[in-house]
Image (cartoon, rainbow, N blue to C red):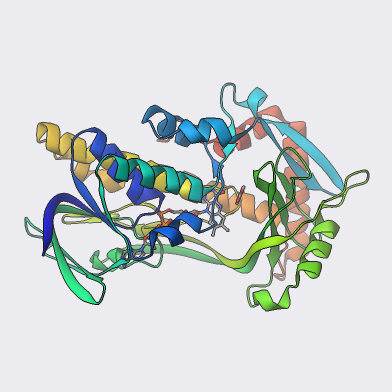
Length: 392
Ligand code: FAD
Ligand code: DHB
């Protein structure tokens, strides 16, 4: 048995760490259980693009000092199709709002450091196996650490354990919405300065490509690839050659460098309703997944954590249960907005092999051209891309 706590948090990803941090700022105790080592979660390469409200939250709650120094603020992005690149000025379309490049693992490092400096408890290499008593008053989380089964008692449990976690399984009679895409993303991290100051989303007849970055010395690149491909089929030379083909425009070249990380990710849209059951509340990827195009996953995970923290604070500070009761209802509008944007952004840029592929390609080009010719259409895209302040 370990020391009981108020909120047991499963998972030290962005959702679990932000939740623990926000609760701590209001004097509410939590314990985080994380199956991986600290080193592993601090090195795991994933997301990199933060919406304005995510940046604002991290800075206003005191975990944005390094972000302010090191992150790269982007006031625009590029789309590319039919061999031409077009810059979209986000700052003109959504005044005062931009996007920021700062690696997910950097956000995770900053949050872990802040939690530990404040005396927070994070058990690494502590894999949760089951949760009991969610319908009673004192749930118990069972986790395994160093081969020993340990029990943690809490008032509430927050399931922030990602898409492959165990918490979602405790929600009775869920409704699941799902779409699996017939392609994957191959992502690399390369030790070379970005070849463009901003992101490039490229629609090409051979498939989608994305040029993004992590730092002034590290470029991140993605390629659409067949879902059945393995990383061994993609030598570094083949990756660079394919990236050059898909990102090419006259007068521009893609600089290459040593590949320090590479992997293939499947693409899925997924929503699990409700996001709560008894004393369990799901946040982030444990409750929903979006395809990476549009970069909404981490932002959504942090948004759930913010909604859940407010509900726990209302409960502990004033005995008000209402926010906890309507947690799912409060999260879902933003979840579905992000689902729509991510699906739309994916369908706009990827190559499909369906029977009606030729028809879809014409629709893609028509929509991209329309955006370039219509400020309202472009503004609608931009306000979703930088992140809506309010979603109803
Ligand atoms: P996770 O980060 O998955 O954290 C869950 C944690 O729970 C993990 O640390 C895991 O080890 C732990 N865990 C799991 N099971 C257990 C257990 N049984 N016991 C204890 N611990 C457990 N999102 C964006 O917003 N912007 C982007 O630019 C972006 N790009 C992406 C690019 C790629 C290639 C990929 C794959 C994803 C991208 N995402 C992006 C999505 C983003 O990375 C995720 O949405 C985000 O990690 C979700 O955070 P989370 O805290 O919900 O879950
Ligand atoms: C990144 C990933 C995305 O899916 C995206 O749309 C933008 C940026 C990134 O990893 O930097």
